[in-house]
Image 1 (spheres, rainbow, N blue to C red):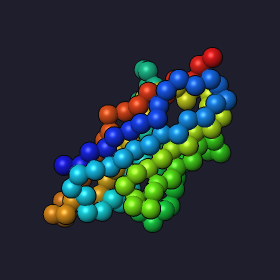
Image 2: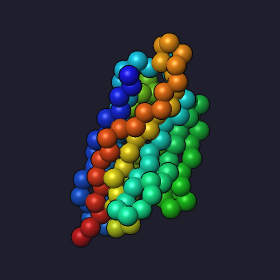
Image 3: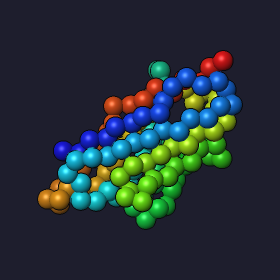
Image 4: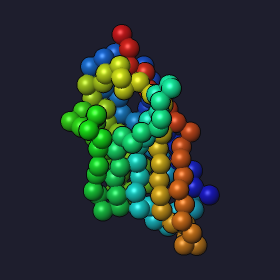
Length: 120
């Protein structure tokens, strides 16, 4: 079983910054890609950013230039640095990871989500 735990959400004023973290643990042999998604009230979940095992990143146009995705050297903890936050960034942010267990079984796991609220 693979577990993802997000942290770092909270309330911030417009123009402020937050850094989200996602720690993966459990039966992990390899992680192919990790990503951040968000879901605002009444809206569908949307992609924010992804990072592959090779280090390639993909960032949504709506946050490009303001958000940056990264991971640690062990490739089991992922970060989302969010700068110049706007009220429209308010959402629950979810961590996702896809990979394989030591038994070569694929997994696609989600975290429980962390609330980010941008408001004055």
